[in-house]
Image (cartoon, rainbow, N blue to C red; front, side, top):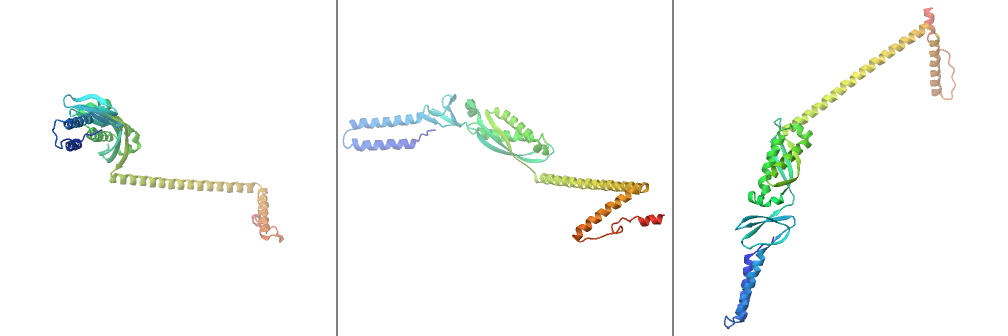
Length: 307
């Protein structure tokens, strides 16, 4: 917005008068052409000052309202560009109508009486059609007057509805409630909110330490439960293995009692295994083993004793 500098205009007029007096009053009378030139310069200076004070600029992204010494705040809103006004009677009031970010922090308590430090980022702008009303009621620093108080109040009211753990697990719901409540409150003051987000959430050191201790205890309990479960499964596996071996021995004993052919078959299998091992160990050397060496007469002594 163009600013009028009275001191600069006065200095220009003074220099013009001095130049005219040196060139036109060197000894002549004051009613000649020099006098008329002086009055013309004075009139030109006054006209320049009047024109300069009759114009004001509105920058991009800004709007302006006019305050008149006669009629007060006008309802007309001036857009971007250069506009006319009545000098010394009308004063333009400039507003930045672009969205501006602001971060507000609040220390409040949760439903379970835990203290939490929460920060809220608000992107706000004025409601342009209501700029005259904003100037009448709040002035140009409307956001400084309104936003800190309503943001703190809304944060305290919303956070008090949730437990400390719910603030983390239900953060989206908390942010939505804060956004809706703030939008309603700000609309009463002709302020529009383009975005509201929770940027920081910090609990007290005591609560943080308690949460960490609880997590460690839960992890240790899960680890202990895993160890107990693994020991139980190993015990069950050992029991099942022992039962299987006992059943196998029982079946082998029954087979031996019923028929010797099973024993003969096992002796032949053992002999084959012994021969394979000797062949692998001896290489090309040839060895001859009798029935005792091959383990084919393991039960002969027992048979003789029993007979």
